[in-house]
Amino acid sequence: MTDRIVARSVDLEWREVEGELVLLDLRTQCYMSLNRTGAALWPLMVDGTDRSHLIEALVSRHGVTSEVATRDVDTLVVQLADADLLQT
Image (cartoon, rainbow, N blue to C red):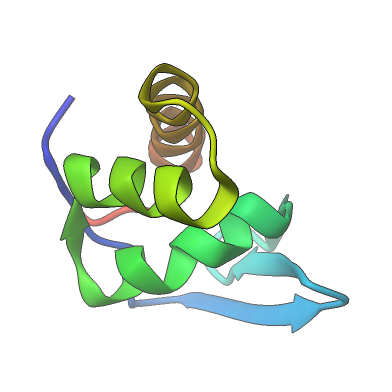
């Protein structure tokens, strides 16, 4: 897994809805939703970030352990990559 994480900026729309994020891939017309935690991390990925910064953000914002934050970040990144929502 790469340490540099950047959300795809082409053919992708997103909107916040009640604290969660709804993403629309305009190429496939598929929707994906991110819970509040994912929605909080998404702006960091739009700007471009690294894995360690995402982990630190979860630890500081939600008070979880680094192990839990690492697992959650890795799961989110894999899901976004599998949906082709990250730049390669």
